[in-house]
Length: 178
Image (cartoon, rainbow, N blue to C red; front, side, top):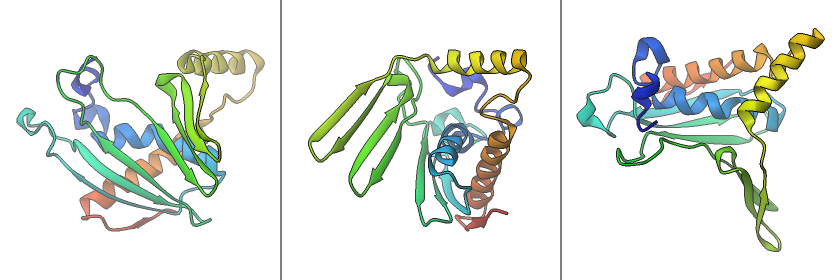
């Protein structure tokens, strides 16, 4: 697909929002699992500068900062910045910067890159993440157990995305989560 419109991502009634929702939902559940704690507050700003000629009803760019009780601050760069001539649309990466190194997870690149005390690192990963998710769901249903990730993850993700939208609508005001 070449443009988010192909998936109706640019129609507020169908997608619930634009670039903020599109990117936050993919990252918030990863952060939740990685950090083992729930987000405390969210601050976001957004605009519709990118692809303005298309007169979209949703934001096309934004920045979301999420604070956690431990003091960790996660930032999600949300933008539909790929040019119209791109063969594919978008991508997802998660970069963790820590005291002793960094790691970049790019699920669609099928590998994990980073830096440590010895320099650059790369570990190829070949799993089809969509297939694994569907396989987990089917097995959980057959075994009579709760599939993972569960609905709680989805609820927390929606809380963060909704807080980001509210913050952006209020000019970047911090929204505290319950």
